[in-house]
Amino acid sequence: MSRREHVATAARRLATEGLLVGTAGNVSVRDGDRIAVTATGVVLRDCTAEQVSVVTRTGEVVEGSLLPTSELDLHLNVYDATDAAAVVHTHAPYSTAVACVLEELPVIHYQHLLLGGTIRVAPYATFGTPELAANVRDALSDRQAALMANHGSVAIGGSLEKAVDHALLLEWLATLHHRASALGVPKTLTDDEQAGVITQALRRNYGNTASINQEKP
Ligand SMILES: [Zn+2]
Image (cartoon, rainbow, N blue to C red; front, side):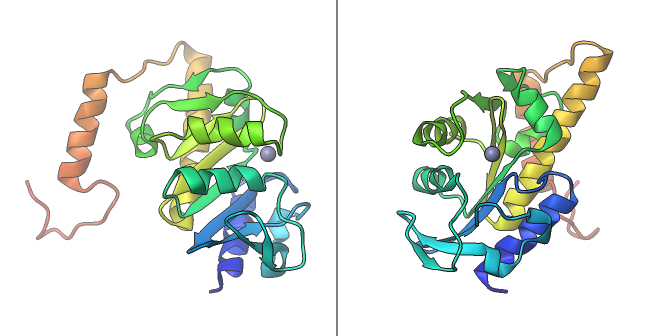
């Protein structure tokens, strides 16, 4: 699959999952010194390879006929600052709701630790500006995802599939926080409890299948 088709497939999946609505949101993947990124104004549910442009690290279009997303600076900034292989930006409903109210999304469930810890909310700035790109880059420090105040979410990963997984996980965690908050004040995991999760995850190779013969007691 070409890198442009790869991005289009991920965009269609995220739209099907309800994370990308209409033309809101964008997806990119890094391939060496090239970045394949969804074009501006594309209905992401129907995204095709032709609606994905390939740019250089400085944003010059080298493949495709459409102008890249207005958040191109955000994607380029993240690639400059991290070793991420892919970036997913959404206006997912619960993630965006959390980003309109909270300063950060606390760890109330152990799966949250797959994203690296408490999720920061990047301060608000106008969409498509270098200021917003810089705020998101900072919020992503040592994390696989961040929220954007009164705007949406960003997830990264070591592959496009991982970045998509992280965007879905963040939306699940935001939904969980919303539902738990309807019942009372959600309890956060303590530092000790979080350390215990990481120890256990490493011991059990969490998230991967294991044959019966191989699993350690
Ligand atoms: Zn946006």
